[in-house]
Length: 253
Image (tube, rainbow, N blue to C red; front, side, top):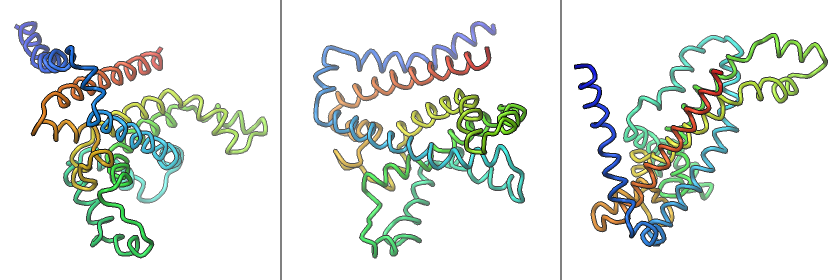
């Protein structure tokens, strides 16, 4: 009985994926992949997620290191708040971003005075991706820094290394497998972001329409691009998960 139930679950999870691949990876895959709609979505997604990853490393790494190395009042509350986007519905995140950066939002008027319009722009796509995906890197980076033994850092300080030298030559290399895993998860989450993006950035072809938005749009008119992009997402997601499994396995060995 357990084997039968397990088989049912495996089929339930795998069958829709196999159907997507079967319908998407046909003779028309490459011609459709080269269509303007698909290429625009791929270009926007790769560009925005690349910027999101760069900002994630620059902005989140110091916070993860501080949370892992220091205790201070309100740390638990701050830690929970920074993890909140993981469990927050993406649509709610989009509403929050609009109320913050929109024309009538909290920061909208000052930005307008500076000649900056954030909503429904590529910058809005990046902000939405950063908001929902950065916490995944924060969690793994913090775990990585916690896994680095203090003795190794103290030994480097004893040999004359300053705090930056210790971080660069000891802490960062030892925590790197965790950081890489976090970046993979962050990129995958940013690539699949939909709810916050469509509310905050819209779905403008060649400007803010990412892969997921292009799939949603194509489902209303031409199914071929939706199937091709869905197959691409499945292949990318599987590759990312496989990479995470390899990183995790090597880290444990």
